[in-house]
Amino acid sequence: MRPRVTLIGDVMLDVVTRPLGPVQATSDTASTTVVGRGGSAANAAVGLARAGCDVTYVGAVGRDPAADVLRALFESAGVATRLQVVDAPTGVVVAIVDGSGQRAMFTSRGANAQLRGAHVASALAEGADHVHVSGYTVLDERTRDVARTAIDVARGRGTPVSVDACSLGPLRAMGADHFLAAVAGATTIFANEEEAEQLGGGSLERALTRLTDLFAEVVVTLGSRGALVRSDEGEVRVAASSHRVLDTTGAGDAATGAYLAARLRGSSRRAALEAAMAAAADVVSGLGAG
Image 1 (cartoon, one colour):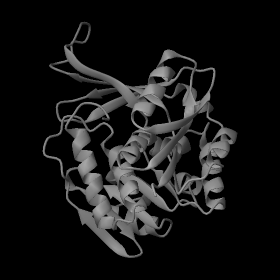
Image 2 (tube, helix red, strand yellow):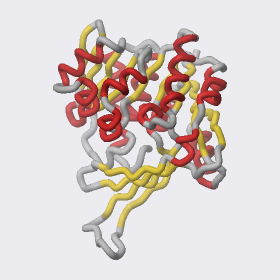
Image 3 (cartoon, one colour):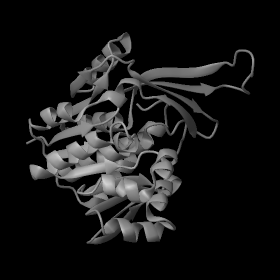
Image 4 (cartoon, one colour):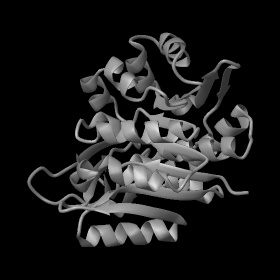
């Protein structure tokens, strides 16, 4: 039977551009640009669908052509949607990618800030084997109560919940204690190394010690060094699979989706991490989230 997964998060139109030379400050710079689906949890949703899960994505969009484009992209990826339509522009993120594959993102959340708990609760009433909540929903005070609703409804139904730390800057601004209180009750947390250290208030080891007291599984991506998972059964580490890095946009999200899909199908933590690294390697070899 195919695992059923519901994800709550931002719906974003991604514009990813990679300058082909030095940026010309007051003129044109030749670039390679792709436009597609974005949003951390949305990227993870596509990864889950590709891995054979029945996926429903819950979010908010505007009454504009961008929303129509995103609906079509979700449908083509095999992801069902429960989208609240609001009177605000659909979210857009512009990512500028440098020569090493790292990116800076310029984000307008738009309609995402108007997602409401009642819409999420209605979607979750349809049932799922797992619920994933994007950290961006937690990090924005306008939707923090939506994340809390999602976690409480899922846990009330006995459904495991995962969350993603998502973004270092907003996480630092919110504060680790407030973030962890906001996601209390979740069973799994995903973070990159910097985000984990921010949550733990120090070194990676200190972070892992703190986080494993709060979550059954702690999954941390380590960039070129691969990834690890810590649980009460111990720690597992695997190496990165990527050999060519063009753009890191969406790599962590792809890893999240692949890891969850593997675990929901009964794979070991090691096998799930290996699947996550393979998914991330596929994403970083091209431009955009894939």
